[in-house]
Length: 353
Image (cartoon, rainbow, N blue to C red; front, side):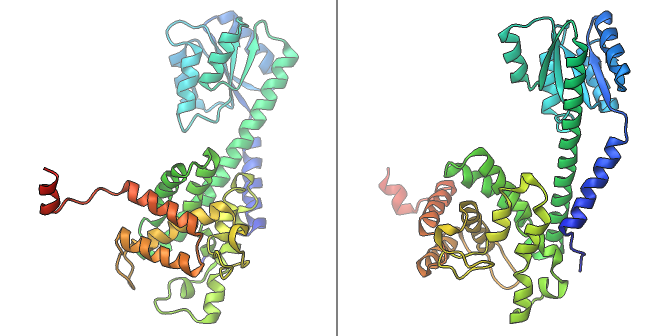
């Protein structure tokens, strides 16, 4: 059995990460093709206690970023060759550099330049000549924000690593989570969910069963039918998962999926016996996807049902009161819209000639 990461343990992981990061001297990369402008920024920031790096062009700046991983970039807009907007776009498109704040430094103060900077992904603007107090305040604020974002990003990665470990404990599920992620995104878009709701569905695909990290192998991997006592243990995985993810505010939309994806429309599910629309809508949507994938996947105790067979079973469950019938109908329309049309019989083909 793997040890459960409770909220206290998880908080310790986060605090340890913050302490380590904050012990490093903040780095600021100053990018400007004019040496005098760079010298001014370097002098002001060095007095404030920052480690200051320099680059005199866009390409050199990109190299410096990869070499040194700065905490913030002061980026001149008007540079020959690759301008500041292009440098910023490339940094924000890169998974490894997207969290680095970019402050555009320019003598231009027109609305068009600011709009272009925002579109490129810039985080703030400063105008030459520098005001020392303004420079200090903005750099300090953005460096702190960057480190908090990094801490959050690291904590999320811990959760996803735990989720992958849980899935690997049960070899019969295959790529269950990846399939849920793909279908969560496409079905969520099909029913016009918002961007954040689709993201929560995607994250739910990875994290919905994370609480099984606290379930003994003797129960989780048992091949036969669970006893009532063992079933009570298994049902705890939803509340364990909620406890693990609750410390992170970014998981706020995912937690209802984790806790409630085994509730039933008629109130016979667990852990709280919610009825109808008391069940959060994302938990209802995710449950439909989860059930469909389980039905259409092969298991040691069952064959893989065809899409048509799976939808028929889900309709039967809806008629029993277990599922939201309207949502099941929407899902059936979604599946039918994504299926390749079956080849026509000889008679049908002849009739269409």
